[in-house]
Length: 351
Image (cartoon, rainbow, N blue to C red):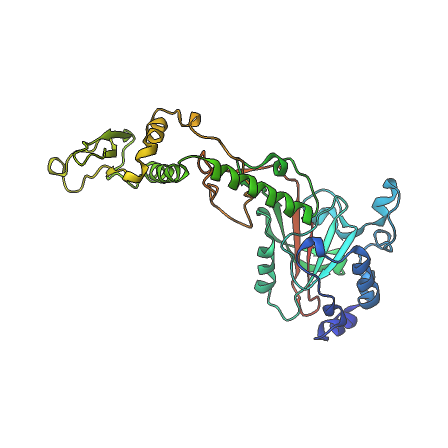
C-alpha cells in the first residue's frame, strides 16, 4: 500500500485536529494511554498500517497475560537496525506538541510522537534538551530506518540516563524506583529539601563554615598562591591583639613578608574576619582533620538536571558541598528524526 499521498496530505495540513490535544509537559499530567489511542485511531488512522511486518502490528487493546505481551507491542525498529540485538517495540503511545521534561518510562516501552511540522532538523534535535533527567550519549547519531514510519530513513541517537546526584542524597530519594515523576516524587524532594535546610539552620556557626569551605576550595584550586606548589599548605596563626581583639591569620606555610619575596611570588596570607573569632576552633579543627567532630552532617535533595557538568553539589551542607556521583539507572532514550520531515513531520522518542 502506497501511503505517500496520505502522508503528504497530513503533512500539508497546517492545523490538524490532533494538535489541539495539548498535554501538560509535567509527566504526571500526561494523557493516559486511552487518550493517546483515541487520537491515534480517530485522526491518524493511516499510521496504524505503517509497520514493515504485518505480523508485528497488532491492534491496541487491554492488558493481556504476561506471556502474550510481546504480541501486543508495536515494532519501532528491527534488531538489525538498533544495535540492541533485540526488537525495539513499544506498548504505549503519547502524542505531544513538544518533548516533556520528565518523560514516562516503561519496561514494555513508551513512545512519544512529537509534532515537528515546519521545523528544521536542527530545531527537531533541540527537543532532546527538553529532557531534564541528566543524560548523555550512548550511541551517537547514525542513519537507520523506522518500521513505525513505513521504514523511512531516519537519523537516530541513543541517550542513557546518568542519574547524577549529590553524594549526600537522602536515602528516601536514593533508594526510590519509579517510571513516572508524579506528585509523590515531588513531595519526596520537598521533604528532603526541608530536612537539608533544617540541618543547616541547626548547625552552630554555619556562616563560618561557609567562609572556611570557600577559602579552602580556592586554595585547593591553586587560586590563592602564586605560584601554587604541591608543598603549599594552610595554617592558622595569631598575630597579636593590640586592640584587645585577637587577630588570626589564615596563611600558606610558604608565605613571607612582601619585602622578603620577589614581586611575582605571593603565597596566601589573609586575616580572618573578626566576626568568625567565636568559631575560630573550626579552622583549627579543619587543619587537624577533626572537623567532623564539630558538625552535624545533613542529607541532601539535589539531583543534577539535564547535561549539568558540575562536579560539586550547589548546596553547602554543614559538612561542605558533596561530590556529584552517578547512581544506577537502566533507562535509555532512543530518538528518531525522519530525513524527510516534509513527508513525516514527526519525531519519535522511545523510553
